Length: 277
Image (cartoon, rainbow, N blue to C red; front, side, top):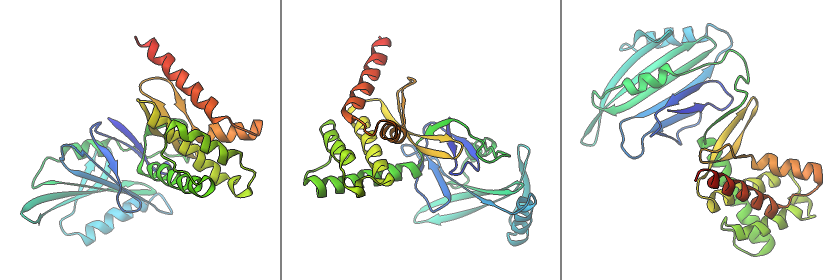
């Protein structure tokens, strides 16, 4: 199973290891198996002003939806309904759950083949955890969320444009591009000293690590209020936070040698691979 923690840490859940998160509408999170489709699972959460909010939502759903019935997932009260519909020549069934977590109301849906099995969705729902305290998740590394995928991609595109403008060269995210990042990082131009530019450089550096080192992958780090992309190498303890790496180096030393950092990380990876033989 994989773990997902919502932005802001409102809730967490576990979903099948052969599923991925995919982009959906704002504040709604979508999961499914891209290789062997057996249903789309969606989840969203809303926050109320008091601990009766979830109960009020459930009561309203019962009044407005004549097909809804009172149910329960584990110890959590919910309202459940379903509908069957046709798209083209195919028929599907969508199952709906609205769950009462006090101040938070969570809505889930699972769309699959007509009258298809919904137990996989119920298992996901049973795994939902809503913390009682703010910033509950102190140190969690989870599969990269769509949110951070967007951050990484946007950073790469911005750096690509900067390199083209500043150096009149292409930026493809390979090791030879590190010197171009270094040029931007060391530039005395005030606009390149802005925190957001340094963050983009850091994430672009992370993309180079992923492209050049097989087994290096993006994840999402959750540390209380901090939520950011990080890199992990296979099953090792090697974890790189590009944002912290560059920001801390620049803050403490006034500079960061990206080639030196790249070689240091590559040496860590090589040492780990040797230890596995």
